[in-house]
Amino acid sequence: MAIKQETFFVIAYHELEDMIKQVYGKEFSVVADLETSNDCIKEIHVDGKMDNYEAARFNEWANYNKEGFVTNLIMQDLSSKGHLLPGNYLIKISW
Image (tube, one colour):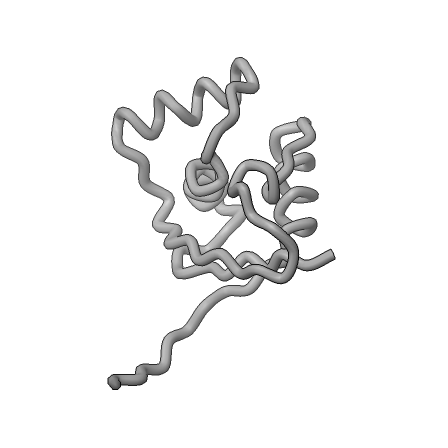
């Protein structure tokens, strides 16, 4: 078994939701979008980039509130706007 050390940014789900509300002016449930439960951690790689398909899906959420697995895309956009640094993120989900 190979064990390696990695570095992550850690953010609580409610802090990410607060950031989304502050930046985009809308309520968003990270827990519902990721379809997760209590006491979980989700890993998302953020580099601030989206391909054409991802950008179109993000714009559907931003303009029309179409949801469904867009947390990653929102985080990419937040990074491209300077709100999140590029890197690997752990989203802590606990209430």
